[in-house]
Image (cartoon, rainbow, N blue to C red; front, side, top):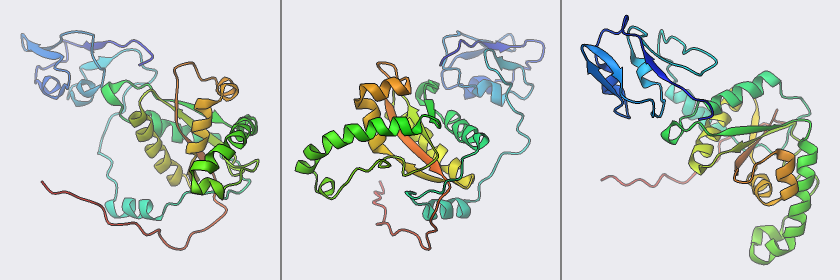
Length: 258
């Protein structure tokens, strides 16, 4: 986590119900004299104690916005969600329409709200708008140099040509997801993809661009990547220029019942 936070429990409003203690994954709360007490501030700061307290007696410092009150838990329609997953496609043809900044902000928020291991919250995002073409040009240059070697070992590469729009397909925006954990970055990307789809956007995962971002020093400098930072994946975003008329067939899931 980037900022320092502290857990505070107001003894005036705490009723000692013990809900926070029971729900704390770090075992960091005890009940003493019929009041909840924090054992140490060396905590993962997951916020379960804040969320579960019936009297709002628990709070955490260091955040820009207070937690939102939950009047009624949000419920997703399972059928609609499954249909959205079935009908989505990787988009490689985009219109020239600009992606609105507020949609980019919503997509990033969906990524930032994704749970991370140990509540590290260490996933970050690089939005490519104005420097999209410059970044793609550097990545194209690298892959054109590598292509002869790739053709020696990869049958698909033998049929591949790398044009000036190989990575972003003329899309108007892209978001590079940076994280020390592949799992955390991939989970954030999945939530961001769903949000992008909900916003009416088409999405392409550009694994090749992420590879270039990790290999190319000039590209790393352009993206502002620090020495130990790694691009996990890149979401290419825009309004789709094509309409697909049927779902893609998938093989049956391999399931083991134990």
